[in-house]
Amino acid sequence: MKATIEGISTTTRFQRHEYGPRDGGLELSVIEKESELTGGIEGTAVVRYTAVTLGDGSRRFSGVLSVTGHIGGRGGSFVLEDQGTGSTQETNGRWIVVPGSGTGELAGLTGDGGWHWEAGRKDEAYTLSYELAMH
Image (cartoon, rainbow, N blue to C red; front, side):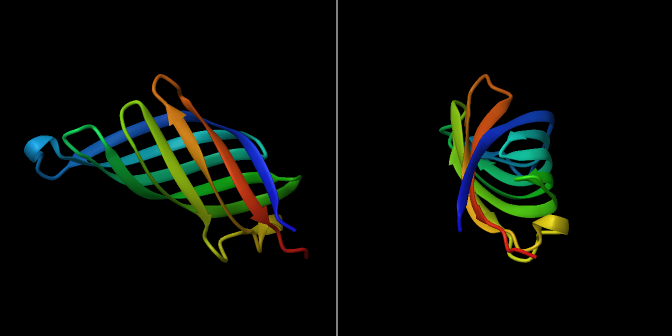
């Protein structure tokens, strides 16, 4: 049965590396971020994004998020694909659990979700709808 959890992801480290030409306001970057997760997921996350910011300030990104922690009292790790769009004022990401990436008591985890960030905040609200195979 699918369950939905919510929580907060708080950034503990953020680093951006720009690369490529910067023509017409176009900006290419790699972003590395570490976060603490509270709520439905209790643990830590590390992500690396590749992002493009256009001259109008809009951006698109994709990345891979490694999560280590607990869901519903079950511990392990798993990987999320993360894609999204946004601006300097707000950003939205969509998650998909990478099939087969769950370890420990989180082996067999499947699901999807997402997050929302607003300017001036170091945290994002997230949701994850998931199923966990019984062992």
